[in-house]
Length: 305
Image 1: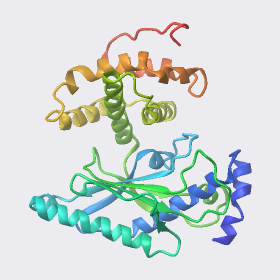
Image 2 (image 1 turned 120 degrees about the vertical axis):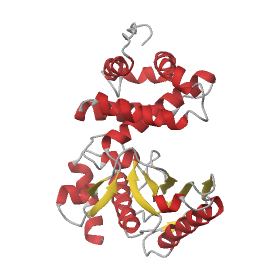
Image 3 (image 1 turned 120 degrees about the horizontal axis):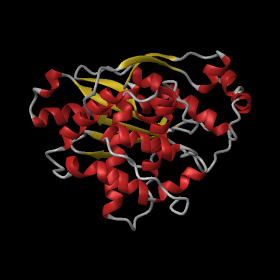
Image 4 (image 1 turned 180 degrees about the vertical axis):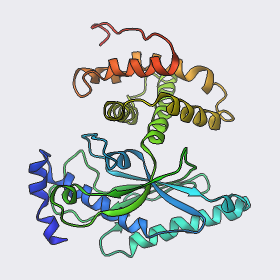
């Protein structure tokens, strides 16, 4: 590891990354994934998902994804257990993961940020401290946020080799091989759904601050469309599956969310970003809306921008 650590500044320079701390954190994100790969419960499969998985799947996000999102995908046999048994098993899995991190020679649990557990251990958030040699920057958390969420998948995961920036650029070090990952299309569908829900929430309470996660989801979708195009039939089917799963708890979701998404896009502060980071994102997003809804998008005037 010392040999690789000495390469961090050179990698940052080669990739035009302002802070070496970003390269450092990216490296330890991959090291933590290597630990997680060895955890194989009988009842669940650990699947790497979210924005960080997207950035490691060849999508150039050009932003630091410093969280690790892990889906705990249950087996059919697990679902046959009673409620109390399922809760007990989830708790045991989370404890196993916590113990592996705590007993490692590299990581430690962040005592300043208590573990968050919700919904009978279906959702868990663990703050993981990692070695920090280089000066930190305000944009980075001093820990890796590990999110564990029990969830089914829209399609079978794909195995990917996960490279850190330093290993990818220099060829030194070893990647995490064959880690089960959520597919790009399923990730895109989930981000679209999250965008709809967060936009609706903003419309219900327009006085609240702009949602930084909404900005990330929009930007990530833009990057996917830019590099992979839009597979409308598959994406539409995935979105419908997600909506169907939510119908019982959100009755108005189906009828109003696409309209809310368009209205929210027009009215929220996110539109201000089109003049800087996203450039032509607005026009591309109009195209996505048009393809999903069949409705002609309403152009935005320069004044509205």
